[in-house]
Length: 368
Length: 119
Image (tube, rainbow over the protein chains, first blue to last red):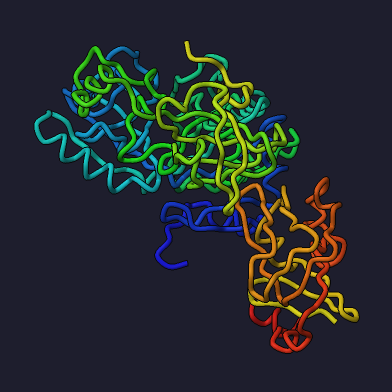
């Protein structure tokens, strides 16, 4: 594996016997012993994930709010300090460059958390857009480690070593404080559909934090969990994955992210969305379920009769539901609920139908 | 005696009958196996052709036939319990039995030692 980046926790994963795979330019643990067991540990108890590969881009300056609001579709003006929004970031054609979390420290400081595989693309784009604004853009990804603690027992477990009262952090809020004596940013966010926290800390402090969490999870029937379980957990909860379910030529309306677009303000790509709103979308991301045996996977074609009407963007066997689940980008009008479609699996057509999502609802708190 | 392929299948021959499965190494790489798409009995396959598919939670992988022949039996226990492949890939996790059409094809396969050295 050449030129792959490693997180500060690489040696910890190897020592735990993880299977390491390339992901978005990084060498990451895909599972430690069993993907399924890690998945169930997060659904039922608690799991810890090394997500230090994620990128952090800091926006500081008088026009931070104004700039970020121009950059992304969701609205950071409407949230308070220590609140977070999820948002797509679009190109001029209305396609999704990346999806991100915007952490509002103050009106003059916003932290953007972006996908690992997009760090360079995002940073270059953001820097270019920032030229006419009174802001400083800094890529601090290499200085920061991130550990996600996810599962219904996360709060109880993490409170044991937390200097802040975690009950006071509501969903999509964050605070700064100490965990295990280490200064962190702690947010009640995640990518699993369960209640949980994401902890951002200096990379030098990642190993002691990880080891302490490893010790704690053993008292809660928890496990370290790899990217494999992260993917099955997020797909059950129907959280989208950049590169699969969203790309540079998929609009947020097509991806079902209308709720994260504020059409009342100006932002890059808005013209295209206004037109799309008028003419209607030509395709839409939807959940499907199989009516016959077979597992739909990313890239498989979808048919109705002889017509190719779309493609699978993500697909797996759901460990919780014990059946295949998938997201498909389906052309109009085939994205209506209960539409019967066929997925081409290794040359064979296998019957499926469009269903309502999410596939599964976990212990995650709801948005206010 | 078992023979192996570079594409991580094993075959064991008794008389004209070849039992085929994936190697322990392959099962470990795949992770939790969740579905085995078994071929139909009577299907004729050529050496190197896709015989069936094994799916883990993560991905789908084709299983290539190490030899040519006709499928005479499939391991139907894998339908209900595909995880047998993770537990015992080179034993109870066998996938199909073929009636061999050309025994000389076995000569080109790897011995266990050759296979292990190739990993």
